[in-house]
Image 1 (cartoon, rainbow, N blue to C red):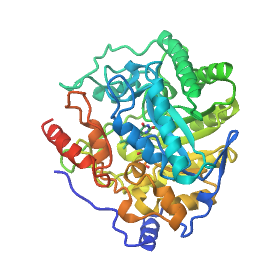
Image 2 (image 1 turned 180 degrees about the horizontal axis):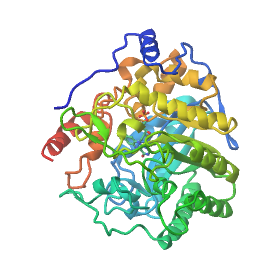
Image 3 (image 1 turned 120 degrees about the vertical axis):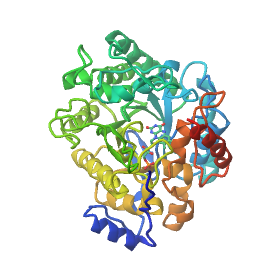
Image 4 (image 1 turned 90 degrees about the vertical axis):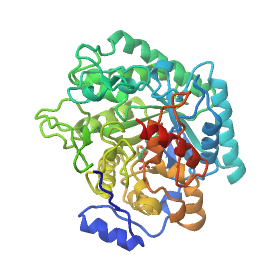
Length: 479
Ligand SMILES: Cc1cc2nc3c(=O)[nH]c(=O)nc-3n(C[C@H](O)[C@H](O)[C@H](O)COP(=O)(O)O)c2cc1C
């Protein structure tokens, strides 16, 4: 039986500070917001403030991968929101690479409609903030790997996660023991697919592309492919071959005008499952040796080991990557790590830790990366659970040199103009903030429509999603 706990019950910032102290965490909160309103340099561009919007897909594209009405609406809302860094949502490089049937796809057929959406975003920003104010907008290139919606495409065999990697999603049948990993030939061809996708993004005016290496999708798995044989597995050099090759090829074709970024996991964590008695998340299985996670200590899992993530980020910087977005965890097997929540989605588990501990983990690991690379713009994640205190914690992190950009994911669906309010009024409003109750994640999991996917958005704060959720809930409940 699932228990219902309420963690976020602070009447003011001092009560939140008291809880942080009680838990022995190092999160700081500033009262005045200054630093976040200052410009930040990224490559050859100057970004107007240090506030950002994380990639947030709405699973609302057409089935051939073009933006739908709700996709354009979301980007337009981000454009008028005042954040100067807009990190575009997951955009598949191939149809087979999509995580759901309504994910954005970059191809010769879709690029025109994506260009129109980008133009609408920039225009809406210009109309709201004036002709001199530009935003930095990026396209996140993705291959969903193990979580491709048509069939799993795995980088290596994982003794725990393979058991919940479904070949037949309707019947819940996992991949068999002899299921193959993607071949080296496939990966070699895929490198060129990424280059073509980056070229298309560049031609239509994106400021940067993100070579996504997070959330247990294909390029993230490659980083952790210690047990994989062949030239993309085993040593750190082999596991970074794909990303190194893609960067080199993009630079050879485009030069350095297109800014390269990467959203990456600095900590994969281990798989969790729901305890049947309490409903709380518990580790699926604790293996003594754990050569299956990036940034996870092989000898003492699930502890983090930042040696390789730091090495990777230094390497990416040397290769010319100008923007890093630090993330962690898998939305599929340990969602509390990546997105600390108040309440789980309908098919998830109750958080096994106080969400502030999750927020603090994000901040601590991001700090390590920023301190290791003081001149590299680093974007922080995991803020939304803090509701209207996102900017107070972000300001402290920015002033302390622990992060360069403070961005929100779920918070941006709830409150796309949080940056505008912060700039105009010195802070965010509680009544507009994300409450981290996971309806957006639940909608992502809802598939029973003729298009194979419900659109996702903020049910408590954005009125058009309440009726959508009502309909999807019926489908989820009958699962
Ligand atoms: C509905 C939904 C869609 C998301 N889409 C993406 C995406 O397209 N790409 C990505 O890297 N992360 C995606 N994320 C993860 C968020 O960007 C972010 O990392 C996560 O929500 C934690 O940040 P927050 O606490 O600010 O929400 C998504 C999360 C949710 C809930």
